Image 1 (cartoon, rainbow, N blue to C red):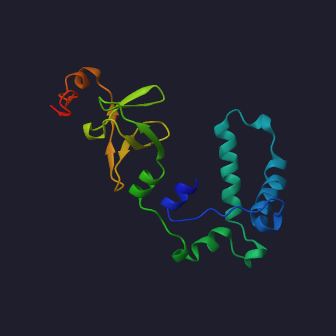
Image 2 (image 1 turned 135 degrees about the horizontal axis):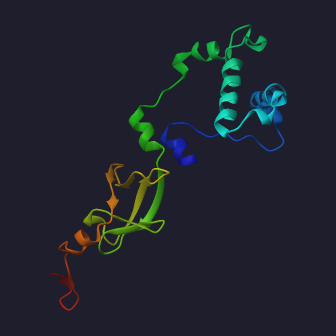
Image 3 (image 1 turned 180 degrees about the vertical axis):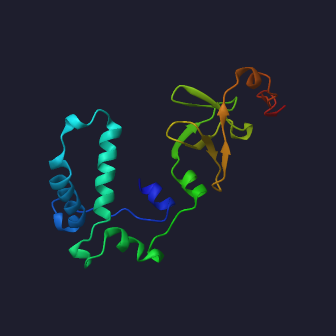
Amino acid sequence: MELLAARIGTTINYCRPYTPTAKAKVERWFRTMKDQWMASLDMRDFHSLEALSGSLCAYVRGYNLSAHSSLKGSTPQERFFSEPEKVRRLPEEKMKTDFLLELERRVSADSVVTIGNVEYEVDMRFARQRIRLRCSPGMDEVYAAEADGTLLPVRLLNKQENASVKREKLLLSEGGEG
């Protein structure tokens, strides 16, 4: 979590245990939601998780569009958009790469890494090294991360192609490469 926060240029600030005043606004929101939305729910009205989620979204939308006395009569949405300079938006490409999971794996001599019993083929220059891999949660996209942060796409292993690649052989008797 700290690594992700550092990537997007923010910090995580945890409250000390048993200090509810440090997170009063968050606690107040959950209390309001519990007292208003959850108290009025009849679970028999919902036949799917999507219906329940839709009800919650409608409640949050209504809450954000209603005037609040603590905001001097303005709505939370108006308050949020009143200071656009304080909201820093991440570019789409940066969001795509920054939220990738990070793993470390050892590459075999034939340039193969394994993630969850699935074999992937990386560039030959990574053979016999430890590398950082970045992947999407669903493993749709897998990249090898270079030292400078460049992401190189990694593909599923094709055993026929991998078997026919010419590799440098170590000649142990001569102490060099052949």
